[in-house]
Length: 418
Ligand code: AMP
Image 1: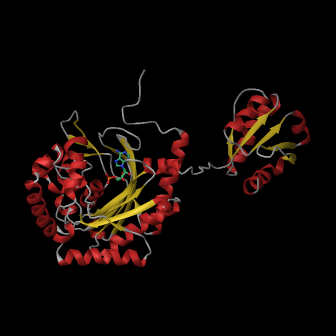
Image 2: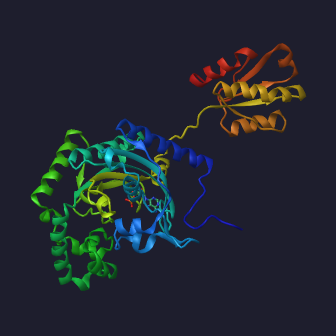
Image 3: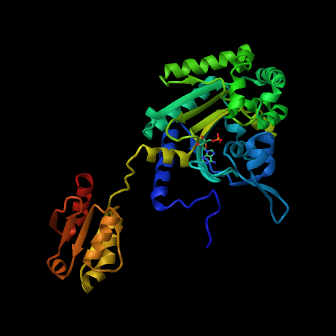
């Protein structure tokens, strides 16, 4: 039997509804902050990610869906959204219109080991604020992310972890200090971190291996390598968060896996998702656009995993209400004939109507219950002759008789007071 590809899944209607709710909330809240939606292609040239994410990132070194198409082009199913937005800025000539505030959503692809909350095709929403190099922009995007998570009802379970990885000078200095320290303890490192030591020692800070964690306790601190300018930038972000009353935990080990970040890096984490605890993450990326061959355009943004937010909301037993619907239940030949035009009238009035197409009254009532209909409109020859239809509220069981001309008003009334 044909199955969905490993690590991908069908989002069935119940799940899809939750995804749309989360995406719409994200889109709505980010629009309050002035972000407008952009949609970039899922297929991008491989060079885009090779040049932006860094050879040593997990994504580039082992997770990309990369292939050569029939015309010989080296392509990738996008693993994240920021690089594509930066590419669009360059190829669409948007650098004339700075600052730019963009929101995106859509599927991303990474060949990771699938587990709860981790898929090979997953979905992200994100914002990017391009063209502003002051900490005010960092605050704007973090405040927007926090507002959105609050709007979804999540603020109780979240921690904002923040760090500064400084400017290029800060990082070069830190990389050397870290290299010297770990070289002296090379044999105590995990095999993976011994490789990281050669390629990108900063990545060791991300390690979950207990041997590495132990060594990290005594390791040089990034904070000690920050230049005065980077320290001042970091301070302004922290002061701004305080003024906005956004609680924050400084996490000196937070570095994030991609090369393009600088200064501010942050993550909102939750206790409710086990190992996959990051729900929203981002940072500043001042070098990205110029690394891709564009002008020097600073940027800051975040992305969240829609799959994980939906899981989290399920875990918290969030009630996912679908909009009210109604069932039409015809009895007999004449009623069947009347059915389509009655359904059309109701739908044109903005009411959601479910039809079950066949079966007796009992079977149709069962389906009405199953789809969670608010009420059923029941009508046969008697009702058609009298021009008065039966409306049965399914939660309470109360039944009333309503003139045909008033059905719409009565159903609308039921939505507001069932
Ligand atoms: P990243 O682009 O790695 O910073 O990830 C941003 C967010 O996307 C994470 O915090 C997760 O919520 C989500 N995410 C990343 N990778 C996956 C994945 N393989 N499956 C599901 N969600 C993911």
